[in-house]
Image (tube, rainbow, N blue to C red; front, side, top):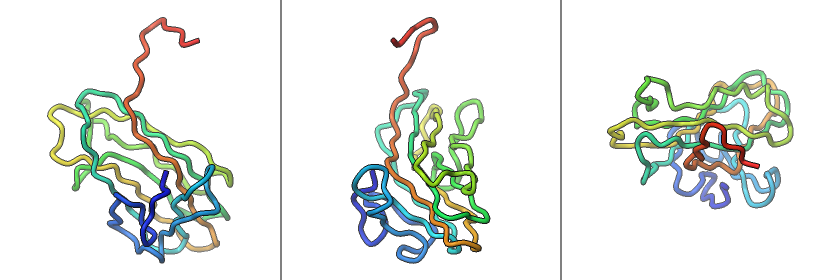
Length: 166
């Protein structure tokens, strides 16, 4: 969750693009269940949040899961979440970007829906691995807001061929 927020930036995250209190805010009423969410407002600067990750293992599949929604009708904008080394998106050994599909903000619902992606880290691991949230091109033209809540990155369960989880 994003329940621990100081001056409109989630604790343990770095705001590297956008202005806290202008482009991004803590949100206590439009949340998935309880607590707080992140709110990004239309018409401001692009917003980028990063958090450095530790204790990751190469060749291990990770699953990213988050919940997000929109209010109003945005005239543009996308959200992407990826693994970042401080200068570029980290690729796996096949050269595939560790990035969620870019979601067009206008395609989101006014109720929370899930987003996610699978990531794989190469060997050797980059010196820095960050999770990066980017909200870009969220243009004016409405009083739309983008909300993000309950994000997790966990080791993906491995399922053997023919295994029935029932």
